Length: 110
Image (cartoon, rainbow, N blue to C red; front, side, top):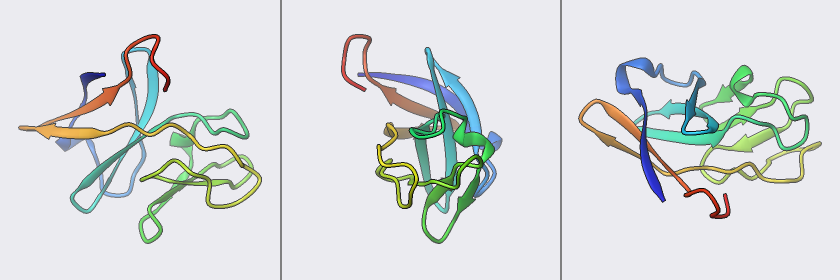
């Protein structure tokens, strides 16, 4: 696994999707209270960026704007149809003011 810089804490607005590319992976960072969640920026159903969807702070989900599938930011599991496949999530760590994302090494399963 590789721990790579993704953003500065000041870049993140509570409950707003923040799209970034870390290494070769497009991800979405979402700050909810004191946690930073990181999920792959691609709906498993509609193949569109999740970063263009809405975040539900109460349910800790992000919704795909195309067909309305929602994904749990903690697990990547879809919480409603039409999506049935999960989206990869990645652990985060904050060092100072930098948000780091842990990505698999190339060749590892994502």
